[in-house]
Image (tube, rainbow, N blue to C red; front, side):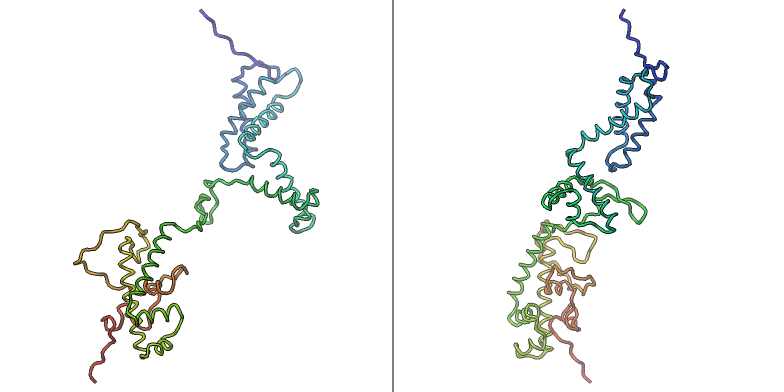
Length: 326
């Protein structure tokens, strides 16, 4: 029969204890040191990981402690625990230790000069204090900037009383590829629709929107009255708006519905007996500058000159209201 080995005993303060008993007795030292170190660490570093590393440092202190030297175990253990946690953190850091030291030195220099001068120091003053040329200081700043890493999952305080992740506060300045492609297609189709308009309507659209002429100036080019120019303009807008609506329906786009995102799968062609939708009324949404004046007019963001979306007050496209007798 093989007998098990008896646990090794350690002398701490003149008392013999097993290693397990010592770990339980001085575990509070590990939590104390881990808590102090975690204050200066980013939120993505878990304190439980620091405690695990600190326990390894405590076990190392138990193995190497010599009670005969008369040093308190608590003092010796705190030093070993602190060193074990720092070593573990350095092993996870991808930035060289020398760069970290230079970063702290640079930050300390900025703080000292700001206190002495009462203002933010210039790069020349910082370089003179550190004994670096302008080129060397620029290189140091570039290296230090590369050490700043933020976690997108880090939570930031919010004025509404709850924290939000950093990733939700970032703005995406890049255009969506699919939306950009669709916008180009709509623009190209609109250009073709303008080219296919009758000559008078095409002339009014070109002079009014692309050359910035007024209706009074356009009537001279066409040789008609100003009211007739307004009527031709309304007819052209109705034709273009209808073509734009057909294209957007083909793209699966629901106009004037902010709760529904665009669908980029094309729909099947509508049946011949389908009833066309009526023209959209003027919308109150403000333009964002990405669409030209023609497209904004077709969407109803710019109203015609006293005419309704249907073309005139009579509701009949292209026909002015008739005055009754008397």
